[in-house]
Length: 103
Image (cartoon, rainbow, N blue to C red; front, side):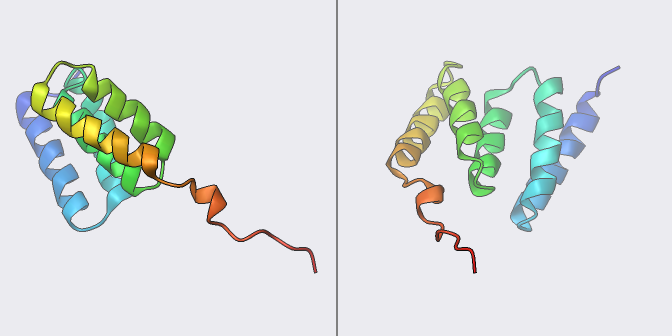
């Protein structure tokens, strides 16, 4: 079982291609699969966190950014820290939704 290096590279390219095309859910699906086979690579975790954020799955994005922050990869930890700060300052989307009324 498991992916070989060429499969991981292909799946990474597919995830990036979907991301660039704005097909975030497809990119997200590939990244979730890659997490397993790359032993939680900080770069893949960060990319997954970005797609989660763009898909408005804020709590999941926060959890992933925290995991990246804890990996010890200085560059990605700094970027993840900035993302966490921006998410903390972001208003809750539930407050932005209009209240429903029964007619």
